[in-house]
Every structure is written in C-alpha cells, then in structure tokens.
Length: 89
Image (cartoon, rainbow, N blue to C red; front, top):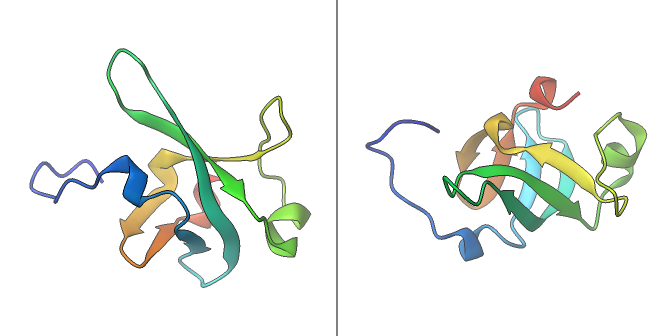
C-alpha cells in the first residue's frame, strides 16, 4: 500500500466496505478509522457487524470492545478491503 503511484482513496469511501481475508474469509465491514493526527496516516480500523469467524480468532480489541485491524495488513482495496490474515493474528 506504500507505492506512491497508487490511486488515493478518500477515507469515507472505506467506511462500510466488506473486509475479507486473502483466503476469502469475511470479517465484517470497515467501521471507524483510527489515524495518527500528526501524519494523517491510518493506523487501524474497527470492524462493524463482525462475523462469527472474527469473533472466534484472537483479533485485538479497543477499549470499547470493537475489533481492531491494523491498516498495514491491508493488501488491496476495491469492492472489498482485502487483508493478510497472518498480519492480524
């Protein structure tokens, strides 16, 4: 995702996108974005409407109990947000 030639995506277009692993497991949808206020870099995002799969694995949670996915685990953004499952477990 660090390739400077990639098209930029507005953060509001990420909200509500379905999150899947590269193996095709559905996690839920993108909820809130958590970013560094100094750099503007997205650090994590929360999962809304989590599936049974995400509830059964050891995904980190925030103080509100929401599931957190590190943004560095995102490998593709299109119709879905595709993540590398090994980067979050």
